Image (cartoon, rainbow, N blue to C red):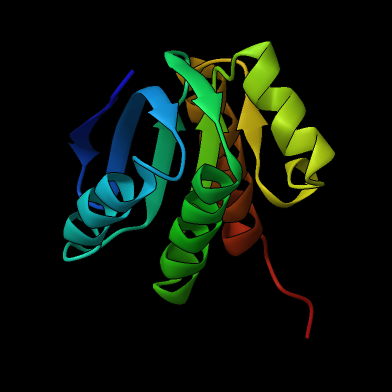
Length: 130
């Protein structure tokens, strides 16, 4: 099976990347090429929707970790959503889950980031004791 990657700009700096098929040694160069194209833009948050990702190999994990590091270099974040159980298990075995936020749905990720931003705005508006 092949790899399909669809990128959707949700807002300025926010992207949804839907990955379908197999991410392995044969398809990871395609993934990395597509992701390099995305990084030509200002990137604050990339959400990988992995609901249709059926298989991930070691080179696929490596490609996602490289994507994460590239986003971090731009002071951005990467999150994963809707992992199939077999894909989630690979991340777990590779001890990668604690390093990458994983959400059950895109809506859950959006809600989480909405709450974080509201909390930050509230902190900024609090009177400061000097």
